[in-house]
Length: 351
Image (cartoon, rainbow, N blue to C red; front, side, top):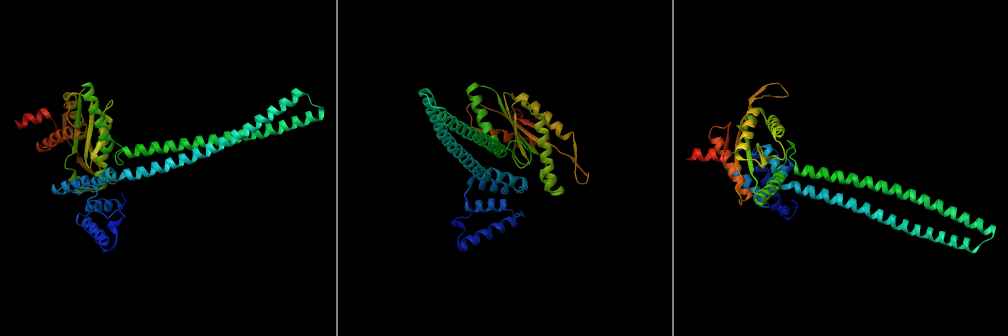
């Protein structure tokens, strides 16, 4: 979907643009192209899910941080860029294959002509020819053979060049695929990859009856970090948490940045007790290190996380599992933060 459509025609379009800029200013957000596209799309109602996320965050009184907006843009607008890259790569491959096909067709015609020349010469030799004609036929065969050898060399070089071009395009497409499924700030799986992986793991659990747990993690008092030290330091903290999480995850567990300062770990074939043990160890690992500001060496103090863990129930939906893990996370935050809360503990507390 392009923003530059009829919605921007005439005075209404001008008013829409001014309104978007005013809204960004009211939220103290920089008027970057990405933020502008997010807000105009929200005002036009083009992405109801995006609008719901924005409105819910504002209603909770939470800041529209740079990390949150970056995550929104990646999830709702990155697919457009990916599609364009795929189309361009596909067109390049199509052109390359068309050229190769044309070359092979020409080579086939020349090979046919060379074969006919050989057949003709063979017939002449079988019938018996005089020395003068013999020399002429041999000369013609030599010329045809040299031409064919030169053409084969040219064809081999073109095929090698085409092979290299296809390999380059294949590598580029793989890079695009990785980029499309990876969070740019942390290198973890992004929301798109998380959603696909969780659906796949739930299908496995339903078909095989295997265990599955979902951990959700939130950095405690992250707004205070941003307000005190700025967004660049906030990004440093986010990368630190992601690095610690990735180091600890084992086997086929998938670590993802869920959005902003929130992370998730999908744990296939893990019981609630095993997932809780992982969460506790991760919590201890994070707060064992005192972070410092890279530019000045100032201490940022101790960073802690709140963690919620839910175990999959056969037959439930993706949203139900995420909702229960999220409820455990908020239970951990309400309980004082810097802790791990599973469903069992949450239920005992409620009782």
